[in-house]
Image 1 (cartoon, rainbow, N blue to C red):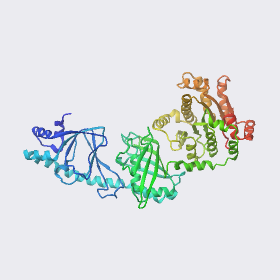
Image 2: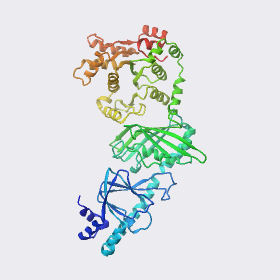
Image 3: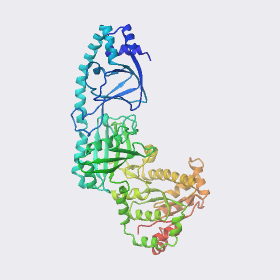
Image 4: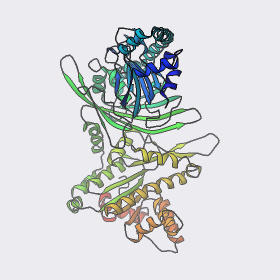
Length: 578
């Protein structure tokens, strides 16, 4: 890096001779800054000139100090970036007032060349020609910056107005909000400075033309209204702080600790977390927990658009987020199952020691929810639940499935076309929250035409992916895996992979079967039983693992007479929805 060449390119030093450049360098010093470190702040006395030698500096303003918005509503906003070979602080050299903006280090290691105002003033006295040329250059810079700044300040104030509108809409419609059925809002952002999920340092890693985000707010009308009503911080400031943190790979260390706390899950920074808000009213203070989950981030290259779903749960304490869901599950009326569970002789021994993990593939109904809740109470570990994508799955069912299966609920969605065959993709909105690595896995998997081309190929890919995860978990924890399914998806797949030595998962599945890690399966439909029989016949009539079918009338009669939950214990089955 040749500093003299760098100075020659700067507008502020335009027209100076090489000896004059040398004299400028003699009064300078190199300063090093780390990411997030403030070089100077808006409203403070800073009268030095800086040249960026390495790294990047963000120039920020506080719209509240500009008189455009109320104080405490919107945080610092970036109005410019200074990279290698650019200067900052020129105005401070000739102006006695405080700094009109803040400068914050925006890269890991940033080196700046600093010139103090006093040193430059002494240099001007020694060489008036230097002072005249630099002053003329600064006048040129100032005229351009004034025009640019006026435009940018207006743009910043207007671009943040979506927060005001969103806050007003949420306040007006708070009565519609529910902890089970959300209040949905569409948010389209075109200003890159206000993107939530996009940017090279964000969780998406790309910079699109716009973001198209579906927001789902889960709360009660009273709590949502209290978060948004006047106080410190204001509702707009709460939304701004929340949106700044969502998708951000860094926790904002400048947040006032007495008002905000950010709690992020390790490995999912920005994609999920909780913003704790200590809100002050005229006569009291109240704490709110705002949990968020970003689901299904997708970049559409053709339209240069990022799409995603963001679930936002607002409550007065963390447990209350799931309390209403638990109450909804407990209200499901299945008296036979309740009676069998209460009087089950093996209940205590199962709860004390249950070595079985469950892989479940079934319809998405409240009966299935209650049955799996009962199995969970009996000590069965539900490793995965795959919902069959037939019929309508409403918000209550979706919330209950997500809760009772410990965020292991997965399902597909249909993509219909008037001419082309129906395709199936992974349903990120309906399915439980996924970490970054798992979400990318499913995004890449269902981009393949051989996977999404029809229902069976899409379901087989999902079943295979989740079976692998379940088997690996059982091997690691020395547990046994039971399969309960509706439709014969998993068992034929196990036979197929077991018999194919060239399959990439052959050794894993063979080991799981031969060492009795997968100990059996239960099938509840005639169609599934036929698929299982066909798999056994193809394997020369040899059964790799026991499969109990409850689809035939004689067997179903016996199990329905005894009670479904008793049948689960006797045969490692689950309820048939009665």
